[in-house]
Image 1 (cartoon, rainbow, N blue to C red):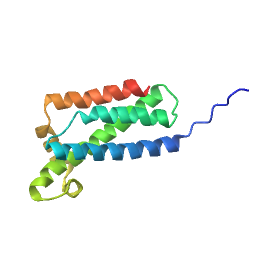
Image 2: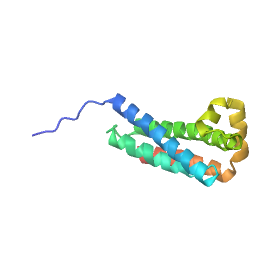
Image 3: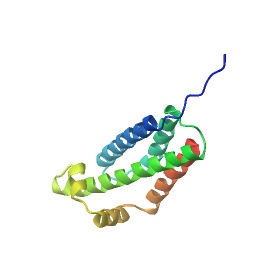
Length: 137
């Protein structure tokens, strides 16, 4: 008996990645608020999560899956950075991270990201993207 490969199903994979991005970003914000820092090392956790979710969704291996892993990791990094700097700023005003993030403009968020992150943090973020590309393919 021969096995038949199922046709690719992109929607479950996309939904799974969106849930993974939201969950990983929430975890990143929790860790960041607990440590009162930016926790850039969580980018590696986001990369591992994206690679695992793509494999669980049975996305075919190759450059396409690697691209999806990098995009999911980049999205998690962007959402997390926005919420973390909003949360760190909002803490001073008695706001929750999501309340502060809705009041935060793009220019102000970028300025806060630049001032709150060092070269080591940038290296962690870049390492997360590289790890996502390698493990997702």
